[in-house]
Length: 349
Image (tube, rainbow, N blue to C red; front, side, top):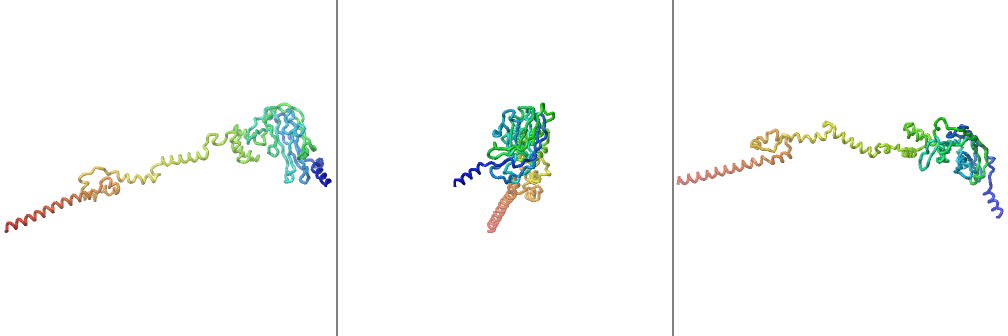
């Protein structure tokens, strides 16, 4: 049992032979330049390490440029900045694609960093295949990279013990005095694209296409626009809800100002007004005559509702008067007849 425990402990603390893992191909462009120069390093023909046993190895890059200022975000690499560019997990997932490392040297002529997604992004940030792996916003445009020749190293490192490493390749870059004559090349992380659009140097379509080509999604692009104040509502344009309200007001205004021939509803409402226009509230003796009430063309055009309001049932009033007069006449005639009969009978008798 004791032998088994000792064997297990030895396997846990065992180290792999990093020198047997092989070396990828490394190229750098350019090989020299002044502060602010944009550097591109390509790592190709990466060995397959997916079958390696624990402790697993990773491929690291060592950058010496910040060491000149005593600033090293990664302290486990002996004063040099280091970080993995190819890991054992990526090998297990069959990710053997070439690695492209880009960054710019520190220079006081570099543009200011841009605050985006909670981070300060600068053109000096180190990107691997377009993804930021290290940021240098504090140094990017505040210091000039000292002149000299710098060694950029690549080596295999144990995942849990970065002090155990094996350097497989070294490339050099020489910094020469002076500032670059031309403007810095466009940063792959999109900072220079955002700044160019903010300054009006590129159009909106170019801005979208370039950021999309770098892998930015719609939400990231929207946040970039918000950062530089280029969203529609930030520039005074109405937001979608306001646009709908404006369109509704414009449509109502157009309907109100349109000619009468285009408003059928108003035409229908005007018809009774034209029919009732000749009607007056004054009544004459002629207008009360029954035969004129029946034949008058003005009376036939008046609707029942308007007629009831202007002359409430004039025919009933006229016939009532005639009936009363006739009744009185009839009563008088009957009374006269009775008196004549009685008088005749009296004379006869």
